Image (cartoon, rainbow, N blue to C red; front, side, top):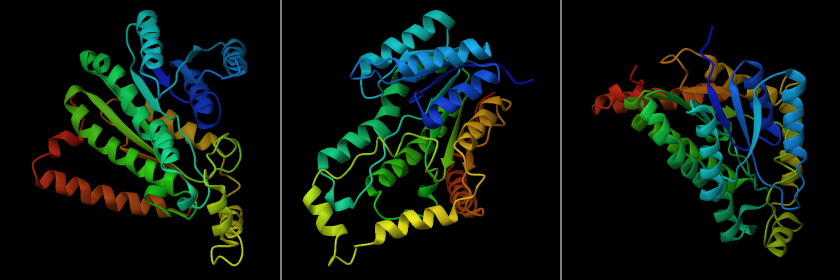
Length: 301
């Protein structure tokens, strides 16, 4: 039987985050679901989380958490530490999508997206990692994207760039945290057009005039957004549901310490992402070993 952990999941109001928090709770872990405070004071996501915990008789507690706000993170972490004494698992799931011609996004929109997708995990790590390091055990999970090693299709440039950055950040954290007994895993989700809120909440081009110019005739880019959407529908497997991402994270958390996979892929592309990510990691491991860092690829027991 796997060890039962105290886990914090960011971005757990909907989509991958909500499914992950609920799946981990049903596996017996004590889960805290980080939920962004609503601007309008609507607490529906908090109540839904509490209701799920009540009906399923699991430990799933909603906590207010804004990954762009140090004070919010500190309060959430302090609450968990005061109640449980530690945080054993941290799932970096909170994310923001941007969709449209990349040139039509304003620099401040890039900044907003990076604040959530890249700097958010760094903010949370700075507050959670001291607790994990003192305990000498833990697991850190980053939700990256299959686009990093698969196809970075057009019209999501800012999002893909941020996920590539997160993936690189996670790779370095693996090396720097392993001597403290902390494992790092990276999840590579594919394209899931339904069952998540990421598209509804996606950033749209701030320069609408530029976007219209690029997406409308006589621009040579006109019509390619429809091609992208249609190809996604054609290639999508009927098995592709967001629950696959939650299940992948659940397997990582449930695995024995020291044997957790560095990557877990939840993509239905015929194995292409698995091949490209596997080749990258093989080359990376060889370089690191050659330069004397091979010992850092495995957590200290």
